Image 1 (cartoon, helix red, strand yellow):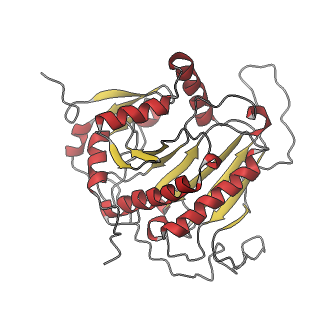
Image 2 (image 1 turned 180 degrees about the vertical axis):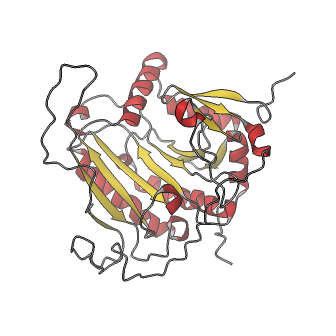
Image 3 (image 1 turned 60 degrees about the vertical axis):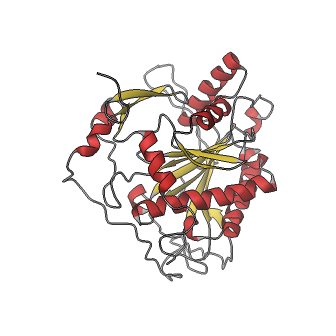
Length: 350
C-alpha cells in the first residue's frame, strides 16, 4: 500500500521544540456528537459603560480608564508577575527546586470601540497597534529577558473581555517555549551556519504546499508540524530578529498581512474566529544584549481552536495531554482552505 498523507496517519517533527505531532486525517470522517461552542459573532456595542476597557469607564480597582482615541496601555490590575517580590529560598534537593520570577504585566487596548476586532479595523488602525507593540517592546526589552506580546481572541480561547485588546508580559527569565526555541535554533545555526526559519521560508516557497499569504516582507504558512487545526506562522522574510527591527515599509506590510490573515480566519466559518497569537524573537535584557541573535528569525504564531465549523473545536485532552499532540487534518489541507478563504472582503461587509 502506498502512503498518502491525506489518508494515512503519520508523525511530523517540530524542529523548533523537538516534539512530534501525530497527524490522523481519517479522523475528520467520524461523526461528532460532543460539545459545540456558541458561535463567536462579535455582537458587542460600540461603547459599553460597564466594560472597564472602554474609555472613561471605572475599573474594578477604582481607576478610571482614560478617554483614549487610538491605542491605550496600562499595567494589568491583576498581574501574574510583579517586580518587587521576595525570592524563594535555595534548595539542595533536586526534587524541590524553585527560582525567582519577577516581571511586569500590561494590557493594551487596540481601539476605543468595543465592536471592532483586527480584521474589521483598517490597515492604518492596525498599524497603530504595531507601532504601540514596538514602543512597548523598546521600553521593556532593555530590562527584561523576555517580552511576550500576545492576544487571546474570543471566549473560546479564555478571553474574559470582548473589547479588542492584547497583553504584554515581561519576564526576568526566559520562559519554557522561548528557551526550547533558543536551544534548537542555536544548534541548527551551529550546524548549518544559517537560521532555521530562514531555511524553512525558502523550502516553503519552493514547495508551495502550505503557503497562505506571501509578500516581499512576510510569509504566512500552516507549519509542516502544526498542532492546532488552522494554526499559522507569520514569518519575517528580512532576517529581522526582534519586532523593533522592522522598518516603516515592513510595518506597513505587516498591518496588511495581519488584516488579510485575520479576515481569512473570520471568513472561513463566518464567525469572529477565536485564537491565541503571540510574537517570538531573540531574547532581550542585559543578559542577552551582547549575545549573538543570528540564529533567530522574528515570527508570530496563531493557535486557533476551531476544527469543523464555528461551533466545533479541537480539544487537547486525553491522548494529547498524556501522550503527544494529535491533529485531525493535514497542514496542507488546512492551508488550502485558508488560501481559498477570502482575505480582502470581510463577510460582515455586504
